[in-house]
Image (cartoon, rainbow, N blue to C red):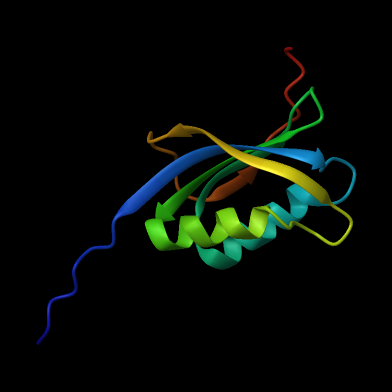
Length: 102
């Protein structure tokens, strides 16, 4: 019986900029992350960007990062920047309230 090596986990926080609010971006992120089995969160930021935290197998997180560069049909993403590496998140994926503290 072959032993299965555990996959390396990765947790990243990303800032997604462009036309990403009011175009279904948070809901698309939620649905896509759930389909991929990722843990984390997504929320609109007061500066017009979207912030997301993705945690899961490194290859799946990398796949989600690529998908974020396109987003849903009406989005026009200009940049996806990793703002933090590491940390831990609770299980599941959640949409958070908009950050209004800026």
